Image (cartoon, rainbow, N blue to C red):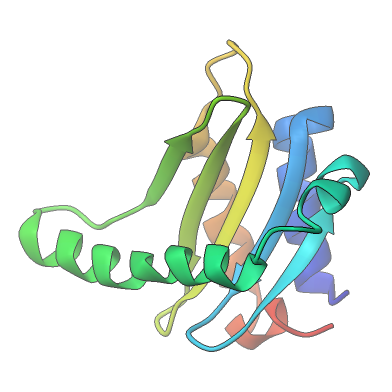
Length: 133
């Protein structure tokens, strides 16, 4: 794993602790996991991960639409599921997407702070460094 990817995983671990389920990066054509908790790795063996990532790619369109419609820049998206929450953001001018899952709890996580940390790390590296093994 590249230093850039490792730093991303560290930020997600610091943020979510044991509740961190997975961390993925993707661009318009590929994707890779940066972190998979053991139980999640087993849980997705029957899941078509490429379809999941394709769904996250719709975020490219959503990001462009939001930035055209609103007076502020798009930051991130949170989705709530019955057992977990999923965070997604984009980094770079030719964006790379990042998403991560966290077990649900009632702590009221500060996803804005997480996004700020992710963007700060992204600013330190060449964007392609996040997709390198």
